[in-house]
View 1 (cartoon, each protein chain N blue to C red):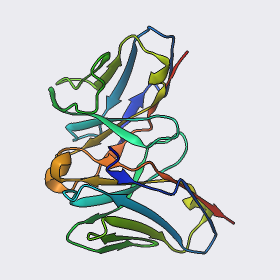
View 2 (cartoon, each protein chain N blue to C red):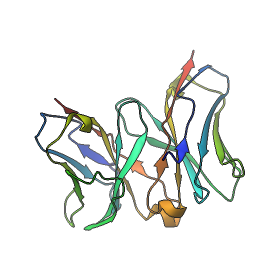
View 3 (cartoon, rainbow over the protein chains, first blue to last red):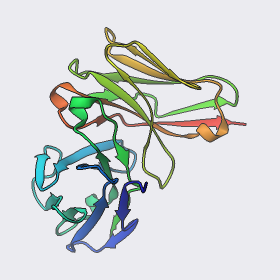
View 4 (tube, each protein chain N blue to C red):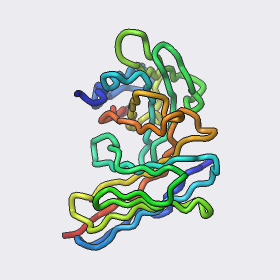
Length: 117
Length: 113
């Protein structure tokens, strides 16, 4: 049973370019979460999606960031016009059910390290 | 607004001794708590959890204690092993944080042989 798959593992972008981070949840999981870890900081929640729906995007910056989880295919976190401050490790997690209703745990991928030059 | 805090950035212990990692939270609506372990260049992996209806949960060498009145939880590892060296995150869920976990900043544990 494959775990949460994220790619690429490392992504280098120049300022102003776009970054696309992909996440395939564990088989049977329909809930996806994106977290960001800035250097020397903990994991910060960004967005929670269920198939084709954004459930909670309270942690997403208001501009340049967007996320989707289409009916078919992986979840995508998209960062437009990247700046140096976007450099961080981006982690995707998944769960089979809503964690609030079931005290479910999250299963994390290995992350994408984004470096903005 | 740091609702989950791990005030010790690092902890160093000798192999075989007990490691105690601490976590405080401010949101009284949180109703379950988890500990994750993270190695460099890997994602966090689940370690142990506890519901607010309990004050202790044990799994092998790992025990989590919850003190709801103090809004404090701790993770005990005994005996500690060099392979336990990692970053440990506590996380909280439930209440107004519907649908997501809120993480602390992490504590770097180093277990010396």
